[in-house]
Image 1 (cartoon, one colour):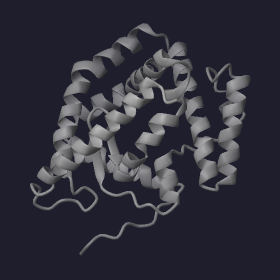
Image 2: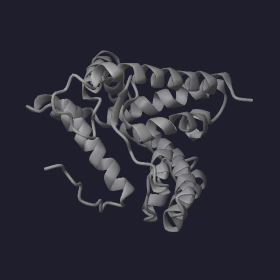
Image 3: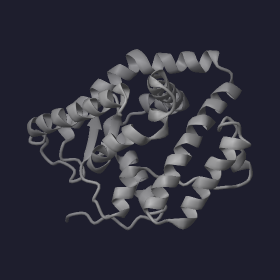
Image 4: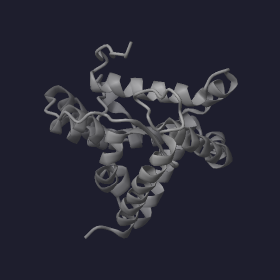
Length: 243
């Protein structure tokens, strides 16, 4: 039977999707010349501002505190642990994509780090030069021919493509960091993972904040480019733009 924690997360995603549909109807007509990848720009900018405010008020201070009190070797071990869980999920998705080399590398990393690496706290696989190949269900759908769809910013969760939003319910139900352990772990592990990720990007965020840039456009373009690079193994085809 589905746990109460997973059920709550799925209801949360369903609520997000419903809210997104309603807000999209209001937002897409208010941008004069929208990027074809981002027809929901008005809504997305509003949600980006909301997430930025939450980050300033909560996530950034917590991440700074975590970095201040946790020594580097502890933070490294935490990052390795969550990377190992992601390697296991990547192995499954690489297999679903029919990518034998990537499946072997990801599975090998997961097995080596889960055993010799003490449940992933040590990244022995990297010392053995076993390469990581990140893969999630959104990329798997892309391999199956599902287009990415428009760029979307979700409350708290941040940037996605619509294809990734469609994959979220399955990700939340089956991805190891959401399902490992008991009910309490289903809350603790994603929270610690979020803090760990935010701590990694503190310096990058400070550089972006000090630069004279449109932070929304910078994040959107960087995110979409990264997704294309992953999907096409670092060699994406040239994008065709309208004259």
